[in-house]
Length: 156
Length: 156
DNA sequence: TTAAATGCAAAGAATTTGCATAACA
DNA sequence: TGTTATGCAAATTCTTTGCATTTAA
Image 1 (cartoon, rainbow over the protein chains, first blue to last red):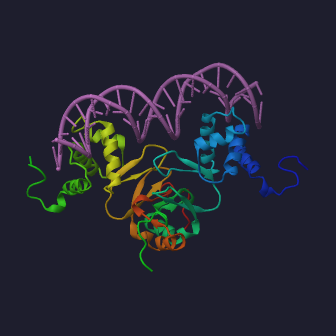
Image 2: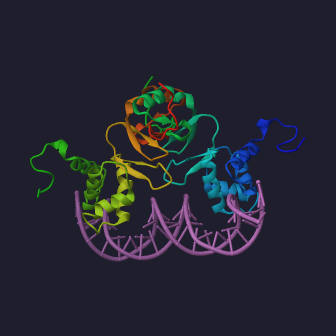
Image 3: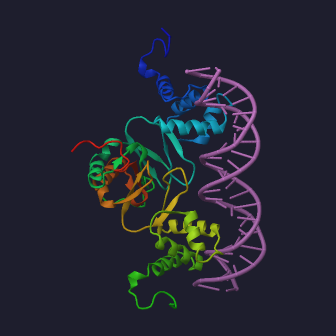
């Protein structure tokens, strides 16, 4: 046991190992900075900015530089490991690519809600049929107002 | 040529006048910089960055400053006259708020396609019902691959 | 007259890049 | 041993802000 991967645990419990393997398959190397970044992404599974991720990594190893974080984020996006989304006026956010899902972003309070990708069903088919466009729910976002911030709800 | 507004044309052919009225109603003033910006937005009706709009305005009146463009863009967004969207990694783009529509953005080639807001119908209802979230199609965007860039199309 | 808008310059935030060094395969 | 990745600093890009002046209402 304990050759490569984690001893005594199932394969699904070591996502970082799997991602590192993917990185290597694409000519990349399994560096500590890259691992620390993935740990930070897993530790706080929401949508984090590059700055927040840098802080998360530097909380463990202060030497890791912000430019390294940016370079690794770019690489991980390229490999499809994480998604990058740009909501408001400010910094982009990153999160692990998990199951198919999309986001509702409230333009008033900034709240981000995940919704299952399956809700795209009919819309996705219509868009594909009429425009030949393949939507990636993970990377898409709906802007609007959440329940609390909506100006008024129709009676009923 | 004209005095103010366009002589001899119908009311629908002077959208700037209408927008200026809206601006005034909200305590704003009808300045030349604002008018020039609106003209630039109308002249090139696609999605333009603040830089492109600045160039478009300065092509007519070089004195107009970029910060004025930014301030006016912010104001016009606030009034709902234009929409701001942030697609790729780079600068935000602005465009006139016209009818209800949304955007398909190809992540490969960057092509932006408008789709009618009506396609949101079922999805919008589902999201409103389940999450209490009101989608604004105009401000939302779908990321994916266009016909040309899609890796492979299923036969049929 | 007077609050709003502008030009200018400078600051600020987010992101990228050049280069010598260090680390992985 | 030869790339690939990193740290550091500096540069870029996009956007915002302070302030004196101008301008629309």
